[in-house]
Image 1 (cartoon, helix red, strand yellow):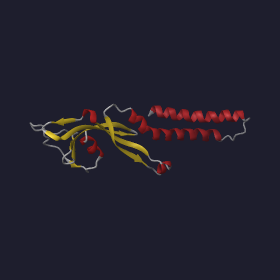
Image 2 (image 1 turned 120 degrees about the vertical axis):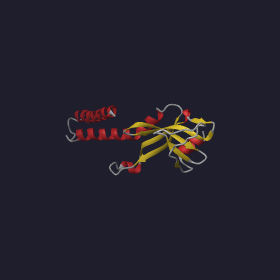
Image 3 (image 1 turned 45 degrees about the vertical axis):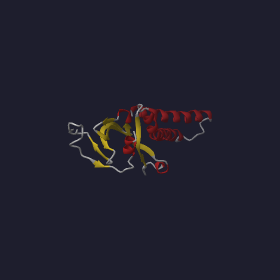
Image 4 (image 1 turned 30 degrees about the vertical axis):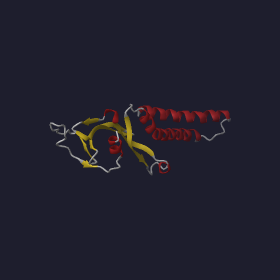
Length: 172
């Protein structure tokens, strides 16, 4: 975040500098208000660029075996350009490389979900999925397991059959 702030400031300084050089080359024929307007436009342009490129930069830095399951696009009237071109503000990644199975419960899979947000820290959550019954249980508070490895005390939630996380994990 701090690096983006510095980049935005330098973008404003750079655009103002370009206008200043043009003004000198044109023997000071440009209006005086053009330099601060160019600085503001440069800073707004840099901010917009950072918003739209955040998802791509973050996604390409994911380690091998961590796959993106869902994305959330953002539109806002405060940013009118997002009405035409929404940007990705959040996404969920699944660590399929470290997927765990229990031989006594072949339809159940345990994976780690990672929640990424534009201005949020990354959150990790263990998720137990039952592929046969299309349900899931978040294991943040832990769960009790029986001797055969079955989950005894989990808060199961039904999932739609076409849920991207369920599909990704159960096909693996």
